[in-house]
Length: 279
Length: 295
Image: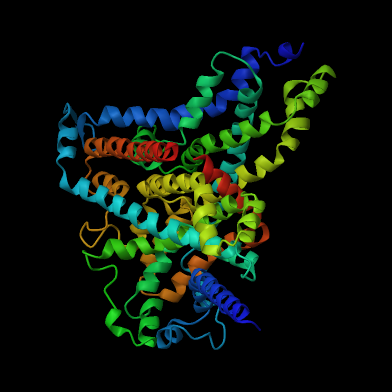
């Protein structure tokens, strides 16, 4: 090997080693949590890093039986799926009108929706609390869903509008001329053609609803309604020093995300990037 | 012909735009107006409410605690600008290079924390920082660096530093993928020519990649600022704003004034303050970067 070649080899080794180190830095804490959740409290206290001698599922049993994680889990599933469906439908319909129709308020309405991307949502935390208090809609699942839909709209409309604009009009025109009405045309032609944008919007809104914390914290009071992030704070209060149980609860929250992520991380990355760049 | 097909009547139009518009107005516009309205009152949430004029704003402007929380947001932004954008860019460059194996694996793994709930990240890092059972202290002891052990989240002077690390850690992947996409959109022919001309990989990074990535960099900076102005979850979980109020950020201060002090009028003024400051920071960064780009 020439000197140059050896230099290259060393350089290549260093690059691989440093990126690998970084990947481990990202993944290991999660893996650590994963296998530690299979240890008993005593075994964990003896040695925090060793693998479990024999995997124990007691922490998970307790997380469900005593910590009632299933309540929070089902609430999260419900809130996230309903708000995703609602945001997709509401944003899709509005975007179609904004992309295709010419009317006087078209441009101002579009600007209004898009300006929502600039509104610092956390400034709305207290006023939203006051609003729902006045409407006697505190501690209500529907309040949270409506809120998630409203805050998902700006980005969804932005993504849908530009996508629908890129679809040629000929197919719709043919459908209208064949005598199909507006909603039939939307359902049969535009909706299926817009499926890439649909995937992006679905993923983004699902992630943000599943992970959202401050608004759920402020709006939901009773245990029966709480979503996972709020449930976790309850849980950690209940098992203050019981790390392995808390780890089990955290794993219950992220394992569904992990599965979805490793099945479709390319779509997720593309979606989050589209979302980030547009903001 | 064509025009008449897309010339809407009021009915269908209202049906299409109505739901989105109503939701948007009720949950975005109305709260802003409400915050503005209540910010002129002294109100603790009950029946009695007295007009206070601009008193809440006068108090806000001289409220050292409020500006301290804003300072914590600024600290986070500065820390993240260096950490996330710096490391994210470096990783993107390394992943694009020819020397790296398992590119796909690294990309997927480093991005993964981005999709996890910030609440989970907060709990996880509280455990990493734990004195007795934490991963960090275990590692330091193993390396014989006991002297580096600190009360990470319990020391008012340095708590923001340690509270910022998980935030940087979580989102590096987002910036890495952002830069990767930017780099991949550069015409490979440019690099080939430069390589034939004898430019080293460092020179190529400095004189080709970096200038062509200016737009991506602008997006990254704006994202960093917008994201850190609204930080709440991580810090709420890890420190609750403490010790004392040393790690409190703006959104948490508004929360604290509402739910612990019951000063709803004042916290409405804080909310307006948050909106003005956040919007100001975002627009200023836009203006600044645009001006820089024009030169």
